[in-house]
Amino acid sequence: MPDAYETLTPELYQVICELIKRDDVKSVSSPFTDLGLWRALADEQLRRATETGLPRGEAFRIHGFGAALKLLSSDAWGAEFGGILPAGCDLFIYPPWRRLLPQEMCAQDSLWLTTQCWARHYLLIEKDYGEMACAERTLVAGWVLYKAKEPYVSDEPRSTPSLRMTRSENNK
Image 1 (cartoon, rainbow, N blue to C red):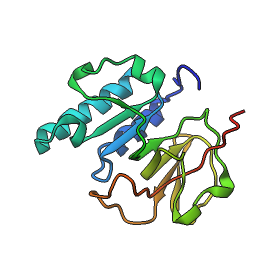
Image 2: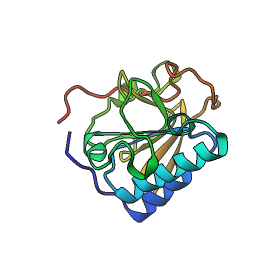
Image 3: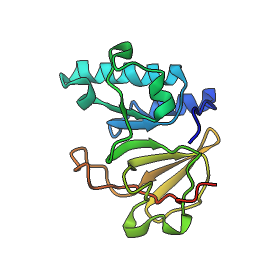
Image 4: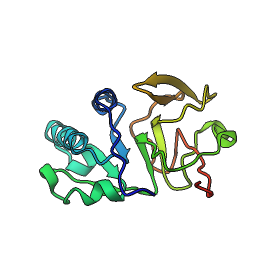
């Protein structure tokens, strides 16, 4: 896995900022090291915590990868950040250094990410895998946004994925 993934265009930044404000996005996982994006994520978490009275990490969960998390202290901007967990995120921004197995997408009406993490409702990915039976596909800012066709359930158990993909163990 690369140390950093910094190719965040202004257009992609705007798309992500719009997505994180949606009511059906209560958690996000991002591979980007762009501090502006992490500040936007922190601000959204703090806004939701203030509005709901929930603890920061419950109001809006923010997860990242090693290089991104190395840039942030646990109290950066007053927000709470975590690494990738064995659970799903409502918006999963898929790291381009991982390979997927397109033939296994939509297995069991789901899109698999890995055996441990997945997009519960939205998957933002650089590579276009075409139309999926289990998800709507939209091209945005040079990336592809897959949205689960099954209805979003806000109190969905963390172990029940909506969008899951399997990655190849041979990451070349």
